[in-house]
Length: 114
Image (tube, rainbow, N blue to C red; front, side, top):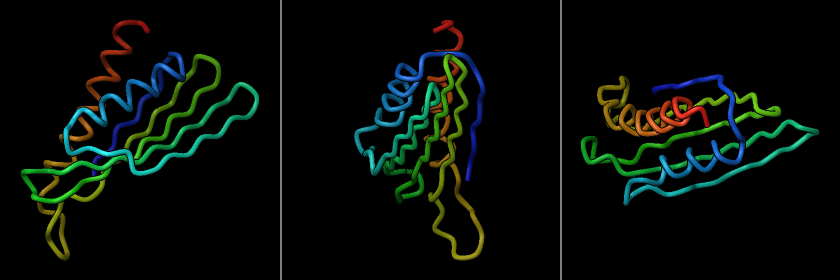
């Protein structure tokens, strides 16, 4: 399992589009499910993506939770899967790669200053 968390300022809808674009950039990627919640000026979006990891020869998942209140954002992204071992996680390269794709895009968004 790999995790990326970041607080920053941005536009909720834009950040959600960046996340989706990054997560679905692989031909084997798919959006598995989603949930949205809004209360006042707070928005929460939960997304679950999967993609095939050629290195591990299996599928890995990416769970993204985005919380926005005005222009304040908090993003938590956690990957899972990617190991074929029974008792220990031996191969997390597919998870880390999936997560890094998202992290790179978010960091680029932050660097651009929205």
